[in-house]
Length: 186
Image (cartoon, rainbow, N blue to C red; front, side):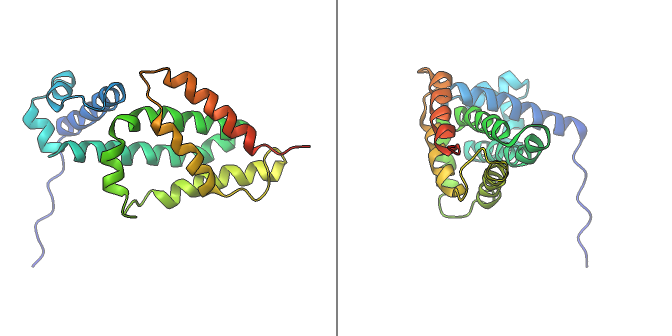
């Protein structure tokens, strides 16, 4: 016997979920220790509503992670469609750096949840980097034969930059060093 079809989620419940995620993204980017009570209050929902959507702090953090990583993965080809490869790479790296501000405060939660090789976004993220690198190699602006996982390792420093201690400026300097190292030399 088939189970009854799942009831569709109400529009107000979906709106609450999206509002919680938007508030949590900003709150956690400002401080990895932002309280769930403060997030619920700022989102205009009760704490029970927050817990119905995200039963634990880790569940909330991981939903933000999944959403933001997928958005970055999807952004790489869009940037290549509208920019020369070197510019697309730099713009994408800047978006990764922006994302790094969120990850700074919650990196341990994400690492614990994905560190065992369970992260379904790892390969697509590496593939997005490879696509950007390949496009730059094809037009001669980037070195040929760059390894996307090596570049990811370089980018991982971004989640260690404290946003409260000149993070944006430092990230920009680090990205310049990374991009300069990837450029093809005449």
